[in-house]
Image (cartoon, rainbow, N blue to C red; front, side):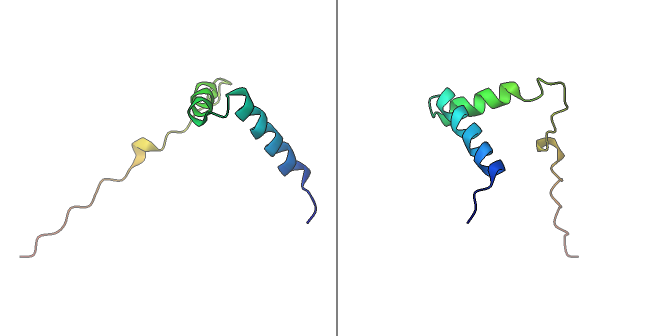
Length: 60
């Protein structure tokens, strides 16, 4: 299987980010959350769009 240069680049960037934060997943997540939206683009939050639960109908 041939190596994909885009995949290789993404993997290299991922490895660099991991090393930068001491391979600590919590530190990586905190850093990415601080960075998101810093470029002025809107950050979409889907947590507030949960549909209300349907109420069960009563037989009668």
